[in-house]
Amino acid sequence: MLNIGVFGAGHLGKIHLKLLNDSKYYNLIGFHDSDRLSSIEVQDKFNYKFFESPEKLIKKCDVIDIVTPTDSHHKIAIMAIKNKCHVFIEKPISKTLNEAEEIIKFAKLNNVYGQVGHVERFNPALIASRSHIQNPMFIESHRLSEFNPRGTDVPVVLDLMIHDIDIILSIVSSPIKSVNASGIKVISASPDIANARIEFINGCVANLTASRISMKNMRKTRFFQRDAYVSIDFLSKSTEIVKINDLSSKIDTKGMILENAEGEKREVYFENPKVLKSNAILNELESFAKSINNNQIPIVDLNDGYLALKIAQKIIDSF
Image (tube, rainbow, N blue to C red; front, side, top):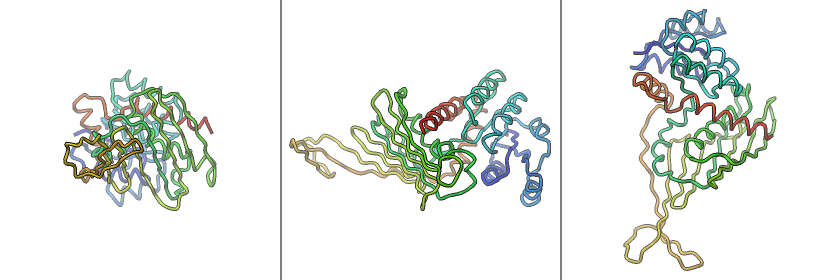
């Protein structure tokens, strides 16, 4: 088992603490949080050991899990890495690209692994449909959330849209041609609503919308390609696939038949891949443990986190 310490005992930090405490891959050493009174309450309620000294916690650990506000990611990560600890960093990897570059540099120098918490990569709906997404040419994502002041320390692009940026970058195998975007401040000091259009050199276009002042929650992405349309609902953890095949007169089909103006017929049929029940946060944490134990690059490594932040920053700069 890997000895792990958690930085941050807020809403998400408490979730990480519980999952790590129950995991067969980790031995939870304790946690550190800058709010001493709140930390003592967490310690008394859940029996997780609170370390007032971040240095003392780091020295007892093999892995540090960073679940703090974004502006503290870099400082904690560098401190942990210099002590030869592997680091799991909640998204985004850091506040600036320079900070992310430094985290990556020090991780290489100290021969440690890092993973960024782009948790949607571990969403069972994406996993169930991933093999059906081959060469999408148009992608549309909507990530809408009811207002919660917890994430307003950063623009909605870094709070919500970055999940979809990471997913799209992991699927589209092509350099980016252009990025255009618009963002609006409604309640926060930074944009609460954003829309971005990313064009890739291979012709693929991705249209992303994110809002944190919606009347309802929505997390849907649709992938359109030559022979299929794949719809993923990350919130309900469900997926639907519409496949389109050229129709041969010799085929006895049970699908729906569509005929275009030129008289060409195509077969359309629907699939609903089985989505296995799982906890995506637990899966990403345990996946990181397996990467460390097997000396393998994590599924969402520090470079992935850097690339997602780089595109997110380009979107913000377009406002």
